[in-house]
Image (cartoon, rainbow, N blue to C red; front, top):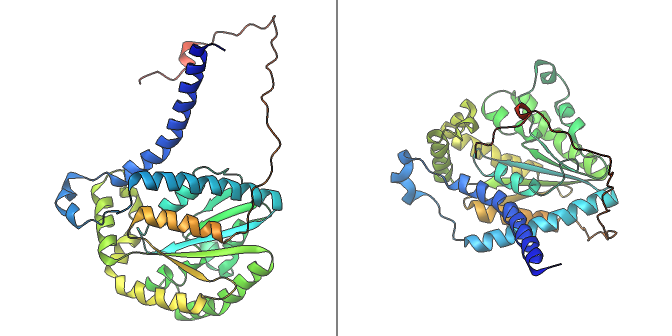
Length: 305
């Protein structure tokens, strides 16, 4: 191989690595976009004290460990269930994105169920969650979960006091059953301050790309901040069981919250690096009689960029 060819191969590899890095950078820049309407309150916005280079370095290192965890889960047929709960705009979605970013979606699934249908409203409360539980060799991340009953359903009067009491009676036993069946259950609560949530909501209101994240329910969560606080405290107290304890993630600093949560999650599973057979790329078979066809131009996407 000539020096020119080596340099070309090296530049190609560097370009591929740069593309991988840019995936995270694009999300990071999206998080930091700010509209003109909000520039006057930027001095109130919580700034991360974590150096960006350290953040990216640690995030990529932790994501590499998540890949090892994924391989081990498949290899050992482990069943991992992670619940992400917290106030609206607390950063749950950002962490879930970083966890799943480098993983195989066939192994690591995200479950974010909509409001229950009319039929589901009259089922056993936990019934609609059961089909989404992990089987052997799967990681499942719940973006909100059955704890809706202890939070939003309770505050918004979608559940009666009797239904809420029944939930608190049932959920410890339900989770003990999950753990007893071989599922590793990890529960995270993302905590942010009143002011931080207000600023994040304002960002969404004034950012057309993020307005879809706001719902009437989110706006009501601002009005009923204190009610949510009270029900959260009771929920954590009554459902923090030894088989499935709660872990609170301080979420005001998004970067630190992501790194801390992923680091902690990795500590909850006794994974090891799975040995892999060396992979070699087979030679392509060339058929001298094969001629590649020229396809019609209208089949191609226009190269605008």
